[in-house]
Length: 292
Image (cartoon, rainbow, N blue to C red):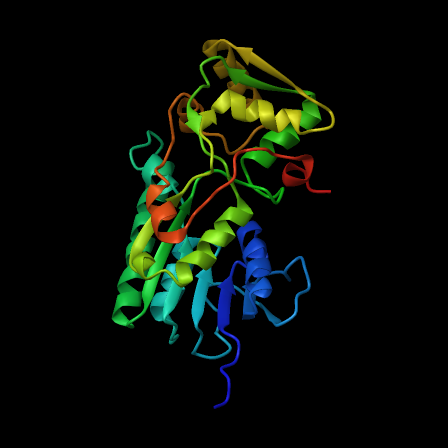
């Protein structure tokens, strides 16, 4: 009998922070990978074919894969998957816990994001079911580890530039930052877990800590050792408004500031039970936060 060849994966968002970590995991376990992104993956790997492209125009190199991974925007992938003639028994797609945290946000844009995530998840599940495939949705919390995220690495960059980072004194809401490699491990584990079929899992980090303590650890990992300055909330809001008015700060809506006081924690026990999920505690290093 001729031995079966390596399993084949189609990976979208392959040059992103989660996608790059996933490529490493797939390479280590002998998968043949077709990687899709708008720029080449950061690392050359054996048994990897890179395809330049993106949604909605990308055409799969063929129609049969053992697994499809989406590590980029879930809405774009869900629409592409709904219209593609693609056969794969397993579909693993990354979404976000923002589906839950922003569902009732005061900012209309944040509510719209949560609704888009929910609709995209439903579309992936429905299309997988229609094709006799099994889909699993993975929802990370605050992602870090590749120095390419828009949250903790952004905090590090601002602190390095100014020598300090300012927070309101009541920024004590709990957070669970999660390392990109732990997310890649969960995606691999979901492939061969029968219990994961048709399920969505929150993927928090291995530790819950107050927002200000999380920022303290980020600053402590930087060689410049920027100072954390805690100020009264009214003063913080004034400083934030001035920074926005001066064009020095973008992408931090009022809702994000309000959520610094809120506990945004998620239950990892379903992922632990079904995926053997074992995320690490939050111990950032400079390399995890700063892109050279």
